[in-house]
Length: 300
Image (tube, rainbow, N blue to C red; front, side, top):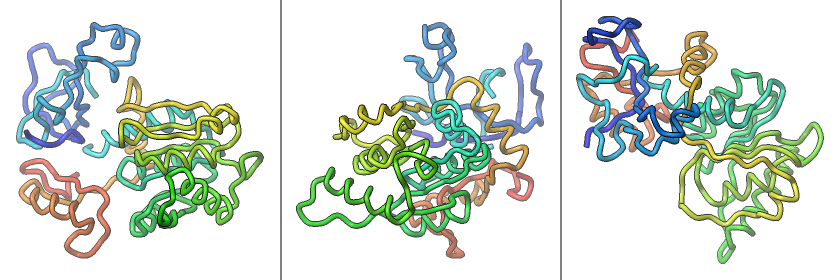
């Protein structure tokens, strides 16, 4: 299986009917090709196509290769996860300028969700993670506040732990469930059961919760709290129409910082650095990006 689905490239060759791009053009690659015929595709929600062919999702190979073929009308390597952030924060959560958001999980998707929130004009962005180095990176990147949940106690159930963690977060950061100190949008990019529980517990009454992280297929949630607060609870899967273009616009206007680190020939080094969580020079590494063959990282 060839890895890779978060990709950009340079057009090498086009078909006879292609009109919008030409050899030499630099493009962001949308790595999913839908059937374009089913109900989901025809209704404009192609991300839900049952016959989606998505790069690096078995049985389909990925994009970490010299050549990759895509249809002309599918819209940087970091544009793909940035589009996930756009879909989660803008399309699904409908975050508005001056609203607040808490993001659980400071991996690549969580960080880019924060970046999108910052670009939109969020008044407060709270980052939550159990790894301090990731919180430090988030604070330097887009977050206005950070919170590291406490370690669990012996014999403590997940719900009891989440209640304790939610109480600590609220006390330390001055979060309330109503008024100006409430958090308008909760977004979980971790998939962890305790993150989902804690997010629901700290959510604003009448607020929005978006689940983008994938964890265990079944989790326990405080459903009475969810219904009593009348939360809008949404799932967010990949991205849909318009999200890629919005992501490209954010990057082009430099409203989101996207970084590149490794040459194509250094792909193994990039994977090792990702596993270690640090580059050779000791910098915290959240996402390793590999340039294309014969492309200098200085030109990207």
